[in-house]
Image 1 (cartoon, rainbow, N blue to C red):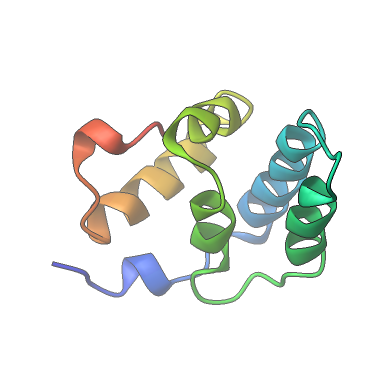
Image 2: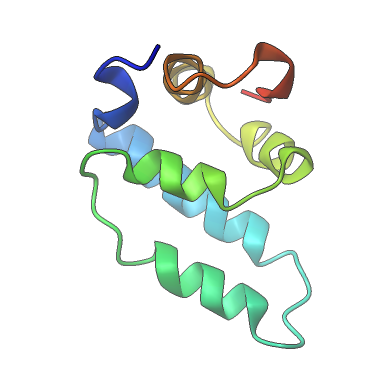
Amino acid sequence: MTTELYYTAPTGEQFEEVKAKAIEVWNTMDNTYGYVDGKVGRIKDLENIKDNIMYIVAMFDVDNQTLLANRLTNETRKAIRDRMIDGGSPEYLIAF
């Protein structure tokens, strides 16, 4: 059952960390058809409001969420994990 946590913005530092690391992960991928540019373009101007951190995370499949998670601090990983659990994600699909 979802409570308000999923829709609550994290700390500014956590949001900026996820944003920067997500862009790093996207920039490791093939941009032949502008796919990476499109994804980065959607992230770069996002503000730390509501569930925007989860929007960034949801852009990745589970394997790439693992790549992202491995670049984050433990505190930020926990903030995302708690929100995923709150949002109803099954624990076996949570890389954070």
